[in-house]
Picture (cartoon, rainbow, N blue to C red):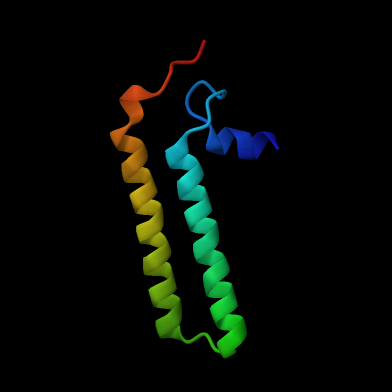
Length: 78
């Protein structure tokens, strides 16, 4: 539980950060949707793997960009 708390909170480890929560949920949902798609179609080609990797990379890049934009507004640790 501490690992999840460390991922989802800001620098002070007390305040949950909306950008981090939404980014983690977005990445988890992306993985879940691809898992369902592969389970339903019963195929995962190299082209699918490439598209999956690029899409997940864009989700994580957007999360990192959002966190970088708001890094100055996070509360400092006490």
